[in-house]
Amino acid sequence: MVVIKKLEFFTAKYNEMIPIKKEVAQIVEDSPVKQGIVSVITNHTTTGIMVNENLECLEDDILTQLGKCFPEDGDYYHARFLDDYGAMAGNPTGHLKAMVSGNHCVMSVEDGKLVSGSAQEIYLAEFDGPQERTVSVIVMGE
Amino acid sequence: MVIDMHVHPAFIKEIGYSKEKLEKNRQVLGLYKTEEFGLEQWRRDCQVSELDRLCILPLALPEKAGGDTVTNEQTAELVKKCPDMLTGFASVNPSEKNAADVLEYAFTELGLKGLKLHPSKQQFFPGDRFMEPIYQICERYEKPIIFHCGVSMEPGTLVKYSHPLVFEETAYRHPKLKMCLAHFGWPWVKEVCMLMLKYRNIYTDTALLYFDNPREFYHQCMEVDIGPRWIDRSLRHQVMFGSDDPRLEQRRMIQAIRQMDMRDSTKELILGKNAVEFMGGI
Image 1 (tube, each protein chain N blue to C red):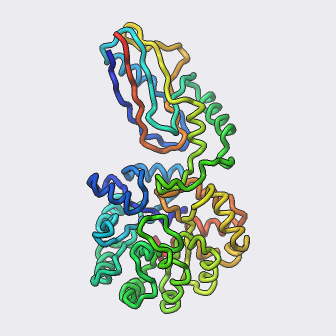
Image 2: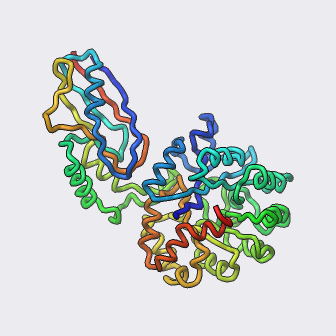
Image 3: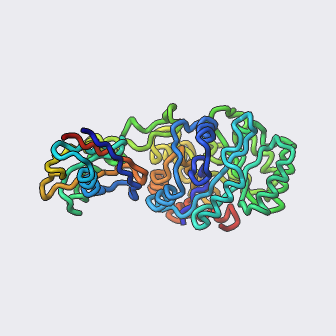
């Protein structure tokens, strides 16, 4: 059995981490799946899905250190006119941070509930906001 | 106060475009992958970019060229929805015989604050005699004009209509008419500087980014291609911040201006005070 749902977010900052485990857990509980897995997948190339501890110090560290890996004033090839868009490429740091964070996570479903460690939060990580964002949640199992 | 003098409102959800019209706007403006978005997106962009106000510029075109991207009436409606965030300009199609009447209506009845013209796209020379009634309306109501100037990446455009030198006759004939030669007339930035020096009714905006990132391109165009002190010493009252949103990104462009090597007071003029003076208030 497969249940597919979409979560919609309107981010507010250029870079931010938005906890979404609560919404994912609700989709799992609302689905008829009792045993299986849930995949959380972002639909975008400048966002990521991360699993980490929900602490503001860690959120800040993650964003700060990613910013040091990919500084805004770095020398990027993705800073040129894109004919297909008719617009300038201006968000290389967003793409590169998204590459590091990855586009998805997979968690267990047991007895109809999302299984996670006590410290585990699921984050939608925004790296080129503010924008309207969509996350696919796919519950698979029996 | 930070004001973006160059924003295109051709994809705003609240206008209620059909799918066909949205696609037509993409093709007309050459913004082939731009999605529709709501006014809330602009509000959030403003918060993140520390922008206070957007000047939205419609574009009037004949039907065979795709029709108006946004009408004057739609522009006025958007302003009415967000008067704290938006200032609206009008546009007219100079090839229409009633263009001056349409413009007068836009100023007197719709409350629009200036005129946007795109000679490359609308294919006219600013010095053409048939433009005189339009300029006279602007003078009568003390409204400024923003002209597209320099290269345009939109399809159906010819640069010969927008070279900075073709604007001189209009500035010469109408010394009280404030006119912005947008995009710094790129690649003819030195010519735009010459015109601003000679005609103090000529302004420009910073809506230019055709290579590299904003910091690098602004440095090249405004500190290398022209003297590094020309703006700061001589043209500081005639340069306004503009982004060309949604073709270009506001946030990085504002940061790039703040990082430029010029007086803080000059940056404040560029980022907002000159725009207020250009429009005769907000």
